[in-house]
Amino acid sequence: LGQASFNPFKDLYLAGGIYLGDNTGTVNKLDDYETGTWTPELSFADDTTGITYVNREGIYTKVGRVVTAIMRVSLTSNGTATSGQCQISLPFTVGNILGTTSVQGTSNIGFIKGFNGSFYAVEGVPWEGFSYIKLYQRTSLTGHAQQTVGSSHISDAFDCRITVQFMTA
Image 1 (cartoon, rainbow, N blue to C red):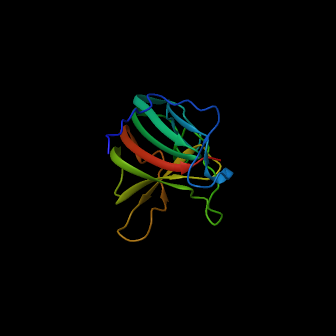
Image 2: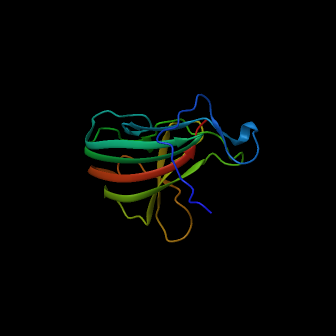
Image 3: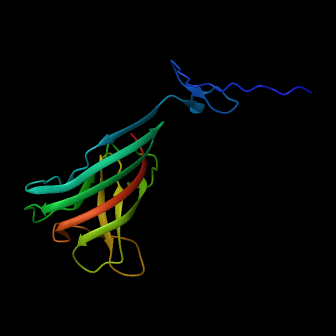
């Protein structure tokens, strides 16, 4: 037998989508792939008064409706808000894919500093219909993170790295 030659494609451009698997039904059509950046914004119940940053950067990859986003938010001032839950913006609105809950994704806070108080974990929760994650803390070894993170928990030296995954609306 002779040796087969292999000439890989350098680039492939499609006007529509690509069908995955052996079925050409619309559920198997991949018609959206996107990478990009956005500037995450920290707020307390939408109040951003006086918040200033050292760094804030975000990158994302969106394949179909699935978004994976990585962000850093680092403050020099937590602002003047005295109430409201801490939230950090996302590049897209979170979709409703699980009909029995408003929590529609997951996150991992890989680094956090400048957080006031005693806690066992801090979680960023993507909520259906919103373009942000809400921060919650777990204050005991058992149970889930159910205490909201507010302005008193976030110091002027707050700094975090968060990876979040969710589906768009």
